Image 1: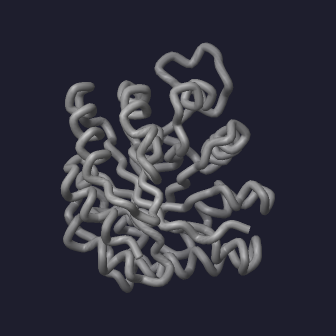
Image 2: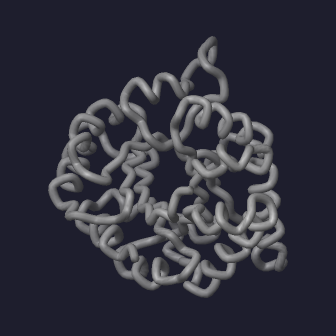
Amino acid sequence: MKTRQQIVAGNWKMNKTLAEGRELATEIAQRLKATNAQVVLCTPYIHLPLVHDLIKDVANLNLGAQNCHQEDKGAYTGEISVEMLKSVGVDYVILGHSERREYFGESDELLAKKVDKVLAGGLLPIFCCGESLEIRDAGTHIEHVQAQIKAGLFHLSAADFEKVVIAYEPIWAIGTGRTASPEQAQDMHAAIRSLLVEQYGAEIADATSILYGGSVNGGNAAVLFAQPDVDGGLVGGASLKAEEFITIVEATK
């Protein structure tokens, strides 16, 4: 049985030219000190081979992709497969980010297929879930997030589920500068873990890493990560600045 892992994943989103990405990844690799956390750089596709070569010898520094297709290959112009990601050394794949759900119409059914494909390929999914401000204000946020997890993940066997990382991202806090309070984050993470206990048992639930994503920065990371059910962060804008990203990594328990 695995133990719960602290993880900080930097989601570069659609940012950085090749030269800029080389500079950022190099600086992070040079600044990263010994850490018990797993650190993941989730870059645009163009950066993956280069960043892999830059970080491959740095302990606990991993490569992540921001998405993948649910099929192995074929006439899917503009898409990328799990095997392609594996071939450039990717370790993790973000799935179901709120921006993918909103802008590209990704459904729970589609995400379940992507989860299966990532796991079948031997990679590790970072499965995102979260609620809009309207759902939060309506008081149905816990039910909404739990429904996303049930639909996207609960078809998995216990052995497969153990490989999944969950990232809770309140949509109203992504890129807005507004962050869920530590208490709000903890309440949701605890509710997620409670759901996992019901489905997979306490041992697996306790070993599952649940990350917080939503305007995590160098100033709030420590208090967020201090919450008992917050196991690190999925970091957006702050991951584009090496010094601040390292500060966030250093805030892990």
